[in-house]
Each structure stands twice: as C-alpha cells, then as structure tokens.
Length: 195
Figure (tube, rainbow, N blue to C red):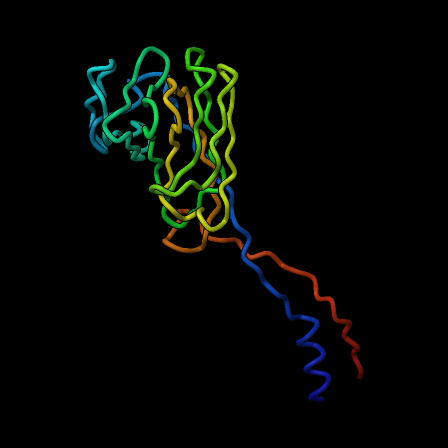
C-alpha cells in the first residue's frame, strides 16, 4: 500500500519553476513637455541650452532620470553633452534591466560614441552612432542588470537622443507589480503503478 501511495504521489507531483516576466518601458525625449521637474509635479522642464538638468521625471510614469547637470531638451531631442556626459536611467523594484535601446536624432554627430556604464565602470562597450535617426541597442551583461545604469558619451562629439526603450525582467525580489507565474514542468522519470 505504501508503494502504491508513493507511486500515486509521484504521478501527481508537479515541479514548479519561476518564469521571469519581460517588461518594456519607452520614454519620449522629443518633447520637453513629457518631463517634469519633480516627481508627481506639474512644472514642465524648460527647453534650451540655458536649462541644463540634473534630476527630471517622466510626466506619465514618474520615473527618474538624471543628466548630471549637462543635458537639456531642445526642439525634437534631448542633448546630453560630450565626453563623460550621461543620462542615468531609472531603476525598477523587483526588475533587472536586460537591454537599453536608444534612438538617435537627425542632428547628432555621426562620430559620437555612446556606451553603457555603472558609475565609472564600462558595462557595454561604446558604439559609434554613425547613422542619424537610428536605433542603437545595448544588451546588458547579467552581472550588471541590477545596477544603476547610464548611457554615457565617450568622446567629444555631439550626442542627441529622441527616445530610450528599456527592457526588464522580473527578479522575484522587491515586490514587483506582477507576481511570478509558476509553470508546470513535465516529470522525466517513469512511474510504475502496481495494484
């Protein structure tokens, strides 16, 4: 009887694994009116080179960006400067960043090089944004996916961005909005029932 019950239990046993959920966040840098000076605030950031920004927030989501006091909005893009200038990306509770894709403007230098950094550490080698109005994609190595990341200019050329798309995966930590979904896996060991 004991073997029978164990056999039944083995048949009914399901092995669960946690499947990461992928999310995509897209931020439009083509209009300063999409951005505010304080989280949840209504004061739109002012465009123009005399209005360089540190912290600024996506108006719709409240997500924080930082340009280290060098970047500013202009007509149709965000200019964040030359060598060492950066756009620090938002972080997401319970999620890790797996990819960052930036769309360049029609007026940036075709010699500008932009990489992904965590503080002063290069995470993804700089790419030359050689084609205007194009997408430049950066896959983030696993060991840096939970770090604070930034798009950073690595030479003295003009850098302009129209949009940034960030792809994340849930980590199961930090209370993300959507819980991890268990997935039923198939048993690989045959079970023999004897009665």
